[in-house]
Length: 68
Image (tube, rainbow, N blue to C red):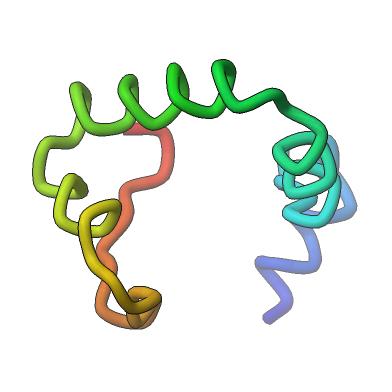
């Protein structure tokens, strides 16, 4: 916890504010969103099934890499 707090204090600008990102995503036009989705799938083909599912994904099952 101390290391995280230290990082936040010293490198706070590097932390992602998810709400800010979601606000920007909500403001995007359909064409822009399609390009984003296409890029995600091209870079991470294993994520394709997330976009094809009829029900929302279980976000706890999604593995992510930071910076990769």
